[in-house]
Amino acid sequence: MDTAELKREFGKDLTFWGGGVDTQKILPFGTPDQVREEVKHRIDDLAKDGGFVFAAVHNVQSDVPVENFMAMWETLRQYGKY
Image (cartoon, rainbow, N blue to C red; front, side, top):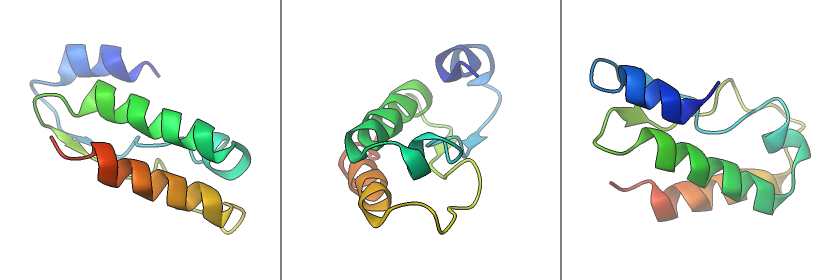
């Protein structure tokens, strides 16, 4: 889904809970740089003017490399304050 479009259309009426990173492809199979890019992109799309609670789309599974989890966490800490 296009998170920027969702924010434009529904951001004044809804709080987005989750959607901070794709847990099906990017988090388990991407590189740490791809994870960072994805997390920053979702924060940029959804966090402006509030109404976003960062969380993974689903539970983080055991096939996620530690490096990717840490890339998600560090990017959230860097850009997740708004």
